[in-house]
Length: 285
Ligand code: PXL
Image (cartoon, rainbow, N blue to C red; front, side, top):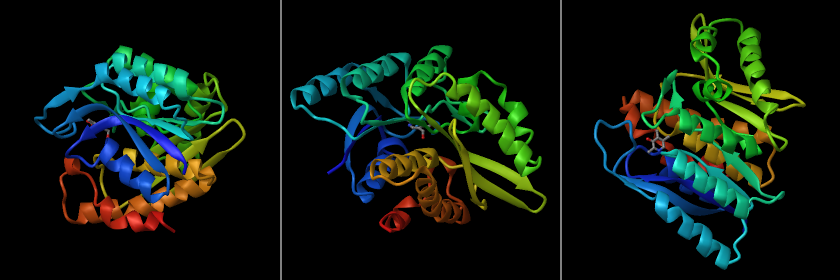
């Protein structure tokens, strides 16, 4: 059975990070192998939470898994709370990433033009080191701009421009990052919200040196905790299973769209995340 190492935190509430990744990867028929970076009573968007940091325990997973001669088909790193954790991920990659391993780096740093509380310049530089080494990265527009040192207000202000113009601007920033990548890379910009007169759309744009692919669905929801993690998990699992990036994106959108819409109709607080559990069956098709 194919295996993916999931380097992420375990947050009891928020339906993000490992609580999102493990069920999705399992439904896609891939073994989920978690390397927890921290335990949290709830994700950090809640007004109060307790965090037990696992930075110093991450090396035991590397040492023990080495002793077991484990190999991975995929490695997926997500939310990382500090530059020290990023150092540990770099060490993990040195031991476990081969030319046959698909490495997906999700540079979790912010959303909707705002940085998360963990953000520091050191974290940004660390994320740049991880994303350079990845085969696929899944930034949202805010994170894309942070990685490229661009002002994201300018990009967001074009969300009502023509579709072609808006996507071209995102693509240009993507190409700047592709030049820094060590491996052949796809930049998958997630959660692109585009406004037309009477309708909003949510889309994802895959940018590689050869080509770009854009896919969108009607957007009736709002922004929720964990949707980026659910999306990246579908992409990682599907690519490891040999699906094309285009099919992986369509599968992720088909799964997330109803989950977001239902949470929104029920007025669920954004911190609690979406009703993805009810739609996991859509990943089996
Ligand atoms: O979904 C990203 C994420 C993951 N893990 C934790 C978070 C967040 C976003 O805020 O706080 C702990």
